[in-house]
Image (cartoon, rainbow, N blue to C red; front, top):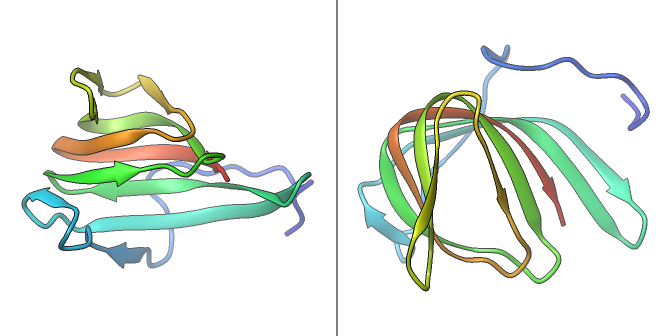
Length: 123
């Protein structure tokens, strides 16, 4: 598949996901199972990469830190989650809502109810 192909994807996804758990030094609450179906990883100008797919995760919370050029936008399909800022406050999203995480962001990701989201990450 080339980066120029049209793609249709959503939930449920076919095939086995990549399974991961938060690194022990980043865990704040629980040890949630995370499932990722990477649909596309494509090069962009300037040695950057665009990745998109579907992600599902059990309730829990862990620290996140984005690189200086890394950003994500996601839309929740099912469940609820929060993205907490290190300086205080958070954004919460449920079905049909989206959150943008900017470059250099530091904080925590919290899953309140098992969440499924479609994501786009640019690094």
